[in-house]
Amino acid sequence: MDEGRDDESRPLPLRHRKIWGRRNGPKLSAYQQSLVDTLLPYLAVEPDAGCDPRDYFASPAEPESLKPPAAPLPPPASVSEVWLEVGFGGGEHAAWQAQANPHVGVIGCEPYISGVAKLLTKIVDDNIPNIRLYTEDARDVIAALPDASLGRAFVLFPDPWPKTRHHKRRFIQTEMLDQFARVLREGAELRFATDDPGYRIWALERAMAHPKFRWLAESAADWRARPGDWPQTRYEAKALHGVPSFFRFVRTA
Ligand SMILES: C[S@@+](CC[C@H](N)C(=O)[O-])C[C@H]1O[C@@H](n2cnc3c(N)ncnc32)[C@H](O)[C@@H]1O
Image 1: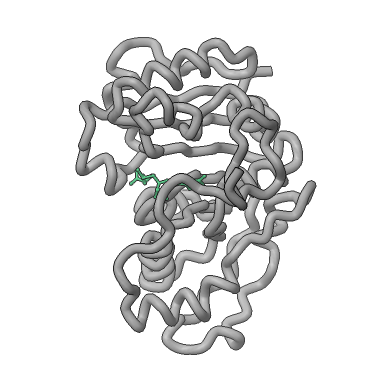
Image 2: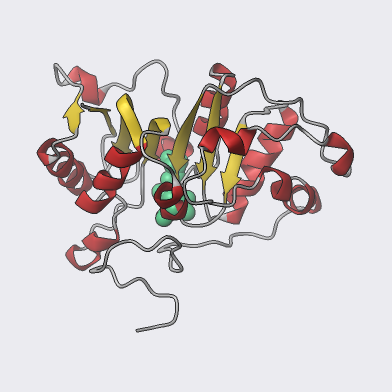
C-alpha cells in the first residue's frame, strides 16, 4: 500500500492522509499568500479528540498578532452552536451561512488551497468573525467531535466519483453517515446536494436506510428547489453533470 493511502475497507482512523482530489491550483496572489501565512494559522482548527467545537471559537480575536494586510477581525459573538461544511470549494456558502447566523460557528473543511484563499479573502473583506478552517480531510474533524456536538452539517456537491471502481471514494458512505449520526444532535440537519444522478441515488439509498436519519421531503419540489436559506455554490452554478438536487436529512431520536 502506498504511504499515506487510505485502506478504504478499514474503519476510519482519526487522521486521514490521503484525500482524493487536488490541493494545489494556480499560484496564489501575493495578497492571498499573505492571508494564508498570517490569518490562516489564527483561524485554523486543530482537531482535538472530544473537544467541544464551540471552544474553537472561544479564543478572542488577537488582532495585534495579525500583520497587515489582514484586517483585525471583530471578536466572535458568543457561539451557541456549531455547523460544519465538508469541501467548501470557494467558500461562498460557508461565508453566507456565517453572516446569516452570527451566533453559529461555522467550521469549513477544504484542502484545496485556492478555495481556502478565496474564503480567507471573503472573511477579511466582510469582517466575518465566526468561521474556522480546517485545510485537511474533513473526516479528521468529524472523528474528533464529541457526540451530539453539531447543529448542522453540509456536504454540497462532493466529488461525484462516477466510475464504479471509485464509488468507495465518495464522501457519503454508510460509515460516514454513522459518524454524522453520532456528532449531530437530535433534530439537527444533514444537508447534501449533488448534480450527479448516480450519486443522488447512492446517497438517498444510504440515508433512507439509516435508522438515525429521516428525509425531510414531502414532494418532488422539496429536492428540486434549493431552500431560501441555502445559497448557490460555485459548483452548482456550473451544474456539470445534470440537474442539481438538494436533500435535507434530519437526525432522529
Ligand atoms: C466538487 S467540489 C464542490 C465544492 C463546493 N462544495 C461547491 O459546491 O462549490 C468538492 C470539494 O470537496 C473537497 N473535498 C474532497 N474531499 C474532501 C475531504 N475529505 N474533506 C474536505 N474536503 C474535501 C474538494 O477539495 C473540492 O473542493
